[in-house]
Image 1: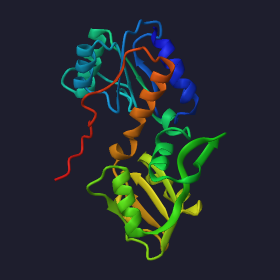
Image 2 (image 1 turned 90 degrees about the vertical axis):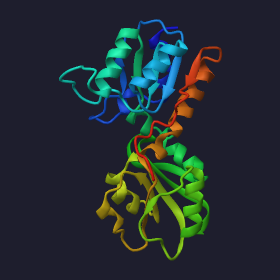
Image 3 (image 1 turned 45 degrees about the horizontal axis):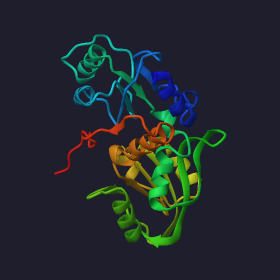
Image 4 (image 1 turned 180 degrees about the horizontal axis):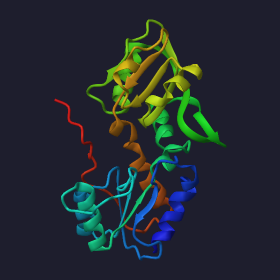
Length: 258
């Protein structure tokens, strides 16, 4: 198996052509012609993940978040990114990221969020192509009061706590959402007719929501972690006998709640 064969399957699902201009999805370390004996999947690439890949015999890592977002002025073990790069190159581990490429397809990050809530009539929220774009919007199975929707969201995403604007007095029937940092889509969510918008990294002032509209911040990690299982299922479907693993340390969330 070669790196390029793994990449083809991923990019048939999440083409690099749809990624955001600021993004760095794709192969950031390694050659497409390199041989692969195993793949390790995770949300984030850390030095510890590279160590795990080496220990389990995986010579390719596939993550959602790119290890390298922008140009590096130096590669040093003094930073986590530098150390991960050095470890990967030293061990011959290829590293690939499906970031906004996987965000912008309907079956990707935001689509998985919609599935968890059981939304119907799901469509792309901010379209930039044929069924591609950021976020999704859809309808709840039945209209629900805010307290029931809060309970549903916490259960669906395994949350102990969340941040939200003032709960609505009426029932919620239409929900928009975007995995990761989605503050820029709040206006689009309102224009879609949604009464609720769910995302992560929402800034303080955005919680002063307009009448008839509610915002929930469920966390960046919590909104995106489902993509790891999606990529795992994708690779296992295409390579059923190949060594594809999900990291044993899946919770790479750098945010701690006390």
